[in-house]
Length: 230
Image (cartoon, rainbow, N blue to C red):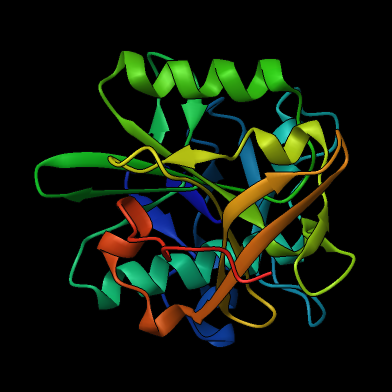
């Protein structure tokens, strides 16, 4: 977890740039609390992992601690990219009415979007429930698959599971695509023109674009290529 509240009620996020000295000083003088369960949190400042907050041992809210380095790195880079776009993103925005925490929330053209950067497999039921939760609050979920989950067999041949198909989206022209992002390469990936060969195999055009060249419109309502490149 990267965002917590202080005893004063103020919210802080490690997506902001803090030096190691600042973090160590903060750890000595502040107390940190989970925004969803209000339990006390520990600020971890190691040398191997991104600085982050964790629940104390025995917490009943440990589901929020199960984030990989890959996931945290991706959230931070997507957050920084949205800031560069001139928006004011919020890291790990928590919505009490639905008891959900979006990885990142931002407002664009009077609509609020919630990014879910999903790097581990979840069930269709969890995916559906979280999506419906956001929609109850008139929020617009954007699910982005962790790029490491794309299993490419050949240049345009992929192995897809039911989990992958959860991420399929439609444009206004009813064109189908699947958005993904890899923080290790900093590439935004879009699978287009999907042609199913079987329940496990498919062909697709694979567009890779450096995140810094992506626009908000590319994320929300992309323009797809006209024909597959197989």
